[in-house]
Amino acid sequence: MVMQPSTSLLLKIEDLSVYYDKTQALKNITLSVRANGITALMGPSGCGKSTFLRAINRMHQLYDSIKLTGSIRLESHDIDLLAHDTPVEWVRTHIGMVFQKPNPFPKTIFENVAYGLRVQGVKNKNELEGKVQKALESAGLWKEAKDRLQKNAFTLSGGQQQRLCIARALAPEPEVLLMDEPTSALDPVSTQVIEELVMSLCEETSIMLVTHNMHQARRISNDVAFLYLGELLESGTTEQVFGDPKHETTRSYLLGSIG
Image 1 (cartoon, helix red, strand yellow):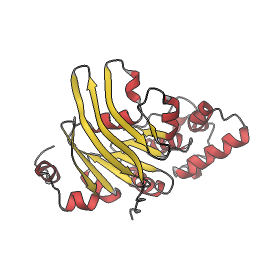
Image 2 (cartoon, one colour; image 1 turned 60 degrees about the vertical axis):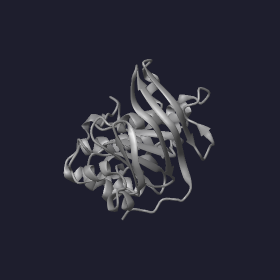
Image 3 (cartoon, helix red, strand yellow; image 1 turned 180 degrees about the horizontal axis):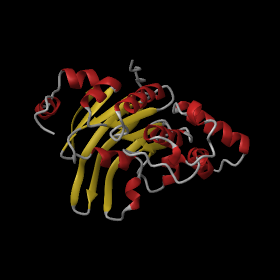
Image 4 (cartoon, one colour; image 1 turned 90 degrees about the horizontal axis):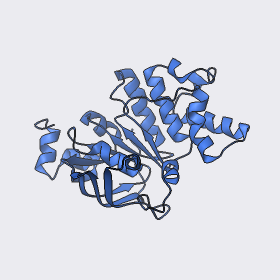
């Protein structure tokens, strides 16, 4: 059962635009994201969903050709994540990211989860071990991994590797967890495990999830944002958007006529 999110705002995104050289990939996106809920980002391939997530996590800084305008405010700290004086390390501590395909580091299971903690400056062995265990428990992987923490992460199955990546993202205790189609490369059994995990994580963090699977969005999200050709056409509660879409393009997408 999907938990009901808080009524308080977590993220306030205003007039966000993203440019790849002269091509505008996102066009003046304005969206409010509620705390302790799951917001599903839906839309056809190439509509800007992944670009949107990467903007929130400041991944655009890896490329000189990408330009952003607008603001993304983390309301709990009253801070603009895109501001030049907001350190990217601070952003990525508070905004975790999980990608479409599992991408564990070529390290042990323990060191994968401890990576972000070490970047934060955590050196005490007992503190590290406690936080790694907590993250693995939150990701539903502790029982399977506790006796093999010094094994290479690539000895895990695909579904386990994705949960390891979730644990790695959770270890610094982020306020927001961004997930870019986290189940698209997984089998149905692993997909169900991840979906149940995502719903349980709302007690600790807020989640923004890109998905092409409309059934998945309806199953696990509280809110939906529908993007089309770089524009945010519609947003609202999952019940509202699926039950009574306001935009004809949204309706066509949900009926399978486009996308």
